[in-house]
Image (cartoon, rainbow, N blue to C red; front, top):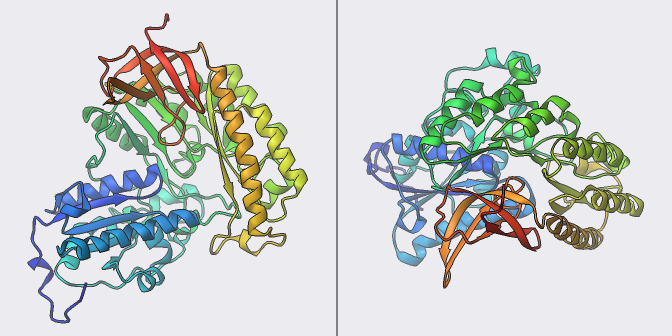
Length: 486
């Protein structure tokens, strides 16, 4: 978009200009997008579902790993290309993690974006978008280490909050605006906290998401009640590190107290917890997650590896023996618990013996889902400077090898569930020459953990919780028949 130095004033942009919000990345970004959508709508802009129908396309980018960065850039380019295709003048605004992390560098390399905004732009995003629509191209965001914006000691952070500023400092804290749902499905993510205090050597997230900030429980509950009123039946609790929830509010066991209250919200059938650090997963949290009615016995445990030497180089704790002991504790409390994890292979210094130990751990762990990722350097991380980097083709070979093993193990774990009784939350009903009813059981998290197809449930609708028994499998996916005996 060409910028005229004498462009019309910002308020000349149509008050009801159409804006589409496009989201990349994780469930935490989904929450940010719905809050941005609410601010845009509250600011007098009109939300539309499709970029093709928009005067402005707001792209909430992801800046976590190389492929996510590429997907974010491609999405910005696709939005910009729409104008060349259909002749309609529109602007493209990039914000979110990639924009926060790279700022002016991104703007220089991606001139197709009419604005690159950081988290500090969130409180007045409607005004910012109107300015761009009016022909102004704002200075690109200047990145900084967001960990420096709040006190080092977690207990001092609550007193340091300034009204509305923490939305930029840590988008999950401070005064909230109502979300504007962008997905009408029966599940919604709820952000418990933002930021991270851990210093994993491979991860750049703390530098651009900032220090750990928990949302107060009453704020989380109010949002849960609002979501239930919007038809949400499952709450998916997300953060960079859920096991740290409450530490900056003076109570590290606050999550155990919050879970029963969330599960008791009228209309909510299931509460799911995600992003658990194994070293911080304490017995009292296991008890709360396995014994509270309405809370899914679902454990999203961030193992990353199983070899102690590799984990130490990652600046993480634990080893295969400790991790298997944790899994034993989970399954002792709830034998049918769902467990998923991600692992990184090819980390600098990883030996063949380390890789074999990881494979042996996964074989013994019986996880429902395993994500296998190859190591790649991330800007500004300690791991990028470590010795022992492996060639790219070797990292790729290790990913392929362990990926095949993980795929086989996940399929075997699904077969273990044959005959198991499930409660399936229906998410979609499609007519494919006969109704195909799909949903997820308690052990299946959204997007990446597989689904359950229901037989004999033609009358079911999204949001229904259907009792069924597993009668077949396909990889991590299950086939279940409605009406199993309870």
